[in-house]
Length: 371
Image 1 (cartoon, rainbow, N blue to C red):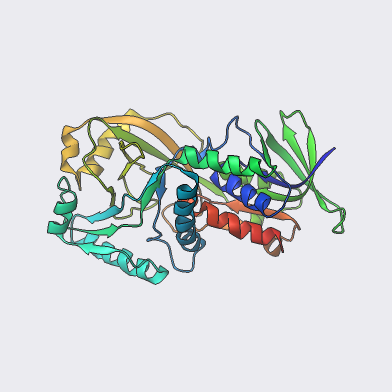
Image 2 (image 1 turned 90 degrees about the horizontal axis):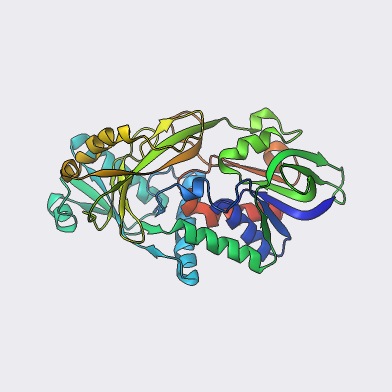
């Protein structure tokens, strides 16, 4: 049987960041990924936004890791030559009720340590973005965008540079904890459709994203109360034909289950709108053009010019949410202190701001593995 010190399950941005962090700390690390390429799941189907950390409760993992990860990600992109841009974003209100929500966002941002938000009146908004029709806005200058594919490639390169490797088309089918003492304890990991039928590892980190619950379910001895239910949420993205009407990212106030249908730019200057949010039972990535009408209605609240423009289907993403739809659901990162299985760390519900937070999450997990 092949052996390794540490196996990370999942080659998305979080799995690769964890693996690279551990490898640079001197661990022998391998990554297994059920798909044929790295970062082809949740990591490839998002807005590519580097979030400033405005919305999350002060005592949450999302808040902590978003703020830490934001700064680490900007520095990482600068050092590696990864395409990124600090575009800034406007969170906009269109009536009095939404203006009250802007004030709540502003106060929460101050509580978590974001001190660069600016409150804008109509005239200031029009100066920055003439195409908007809103009553007030917040400007977040530390929000930006990154090319997710380049970020994934850099993480994979970092891992390989220190001897790590990714095994693709390797889907975990069973995890069996074995041994009693430190010298012989670990896990026998079995794979479906892999040349190597099983692998013995000392430490196991489950970063499988949408598949994290499936991996946990096949881990012998892991009790059900430590496996939160997966509640997938489907989101459409639409592109816009012609020139982009904005220089900043444009967000409405948050809606139940998400941040509203917002406008984001990519590093090439193209604009897309999305996502909407709808609970789903299967990971269906086929776009539904019929949703364009509801998109136009939502966007027209802050950008009336959308009624004269054409929306084009771009892609569909699936979020690995946990907990009730519409409620705040934090990241779940559980180790031996929670579930009692030595050497095992499970990550659940790593949705937005998972890309922004990935380097900070990796540092946290590496700390758990060194204890």
